Image (cartoon, rainbow, N blue to C red; front, side):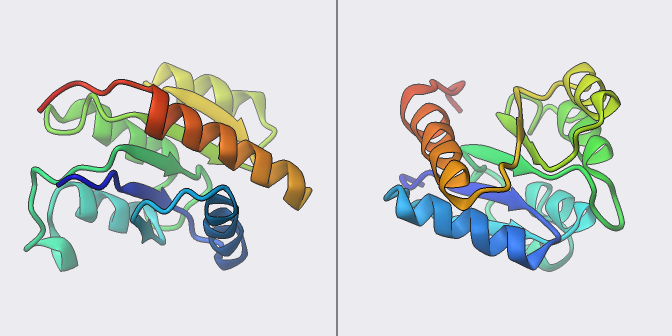
Length: 145
């Protein structure tokens, strides 16, 4: 696959729309796959459930992971990503509105590559999306397959 896919794990429809709009406003036209809870994100990554037919070699370039998710929370999703050799090296950016220090500590302890608080202001969010896209999709070098 030549196109760099973004896996957005977000249960809030407003935050999902805001994130996608912010990416588009920055001309980030990558394919965005949205998982609406932690279980769906894990199914996508490990080609299970509704994603059973997905090519397991087609991994996202970056995962934007919310923490407060239904079914399986973001920290547990992160733990499972890091525990599996197929996904352990994928870049995971925690993208959350949480201001709890413990969430940040747990994210980094469990292998998050970055922790970004969602700005409330749309223009600030657009700028954050620009920086995320520039770094994770253009500048960052990933481990070759």
